[in-house]
Amino acid sequence: MTGTDPADDCVFCHLIEHDDQGTAWVEREPDAVAFRPLPESELAPGHTLVVPREHATGLLDVAPDALRATTLLAQRVGRAMRAALGATGVVVLSATGTDAGQSVPHLHLHVVPCWSDDGVLHWPEARSAHVVEGDATAMLAEMFE
Image (tube, rainbow, N blue to C red; front, top):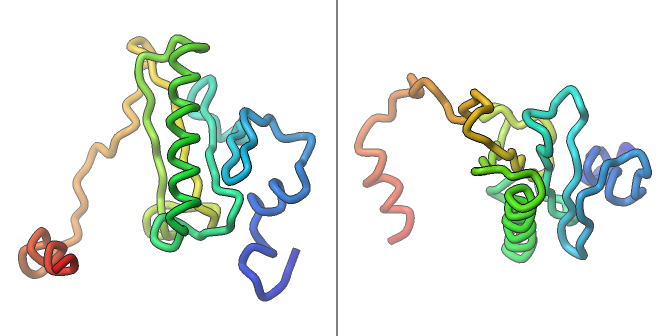
């Protein structure tokens, strides 16, 4: 799996291309797929990864149609968690870039079911210590002018 195309070395692209029978598939659609993560990575019963079939490293470089297919499938997975598992909420987690904690360089959404008694909060507890010089909101807004 080595080559000049980043998808050549991508574990998710390989899994999708070779339709790995050892994968616990939840759903396979033309533009996105959903499957169970490795058992040691599972955050809750039913935790599901949703990824676009098209290779994209993360949120910042994914094509709009692939992003749409991926988020719509994540929504359907969340609804299925509510109906099939009795989840009372879901958390969708994604990271883009190694500094954000991304471990697989292919866009993926973790859809994690939640219940009132699970005792887990999937939300950062601390605030970033990074300092930006200037008004961060104004700087962001300028990018859209």
